[in-house]
Image (tube, rainbow, N blue to C red; front, side, top):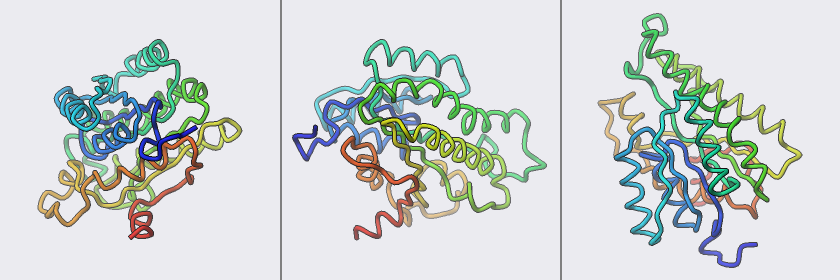
Length: 248
């Protein structure tokens, strides 16, 4: 039961994977401001420490920081076990982590084998292993919420986006299948297309573009809080640009 409208996630345990920058950083901070205790997981230790500083400055509380790499399946399994030992459950999980690979945009036939393998492990297999690790913890919540951040290229194929687009499309389909499997549980799953946003991944894809023409990642924070609330039933598919326009 939510007693304070300004803290709709008070007492909730929220895990954000990919929390060290961009949408993940903004989401973790927004969830913390809404009252959740955030478990922030990402590969970049420095980015996680910056997030913790921001969370503490805003709330007076610290996040739980978990530096790990999504290509390490064992680390994912251990993360689920560690969360169980400390908290016993997950109330919300937001997955924002993704990579284009070191090469960035490249023709499919020119993709480096090692680079392609890393993109696949981070964007696709990592999502499967996180679902496998986190589902029991989400089931332990009275109203588990899972949010997967997708990309428009998962549905609209574009030249040179092959590895990224294919793995994001695969992961989105995997998440939607999972959502259908658990529809009779208290867990609800949302897939969010953030649209064009001022992120490092966007800058990697379009290095000559002026980033100021796109929204800051912080603008998506209120939507993420809304999707993680235990007293709301989130829609299955959400377009952030459309959500934002409807509230303008």
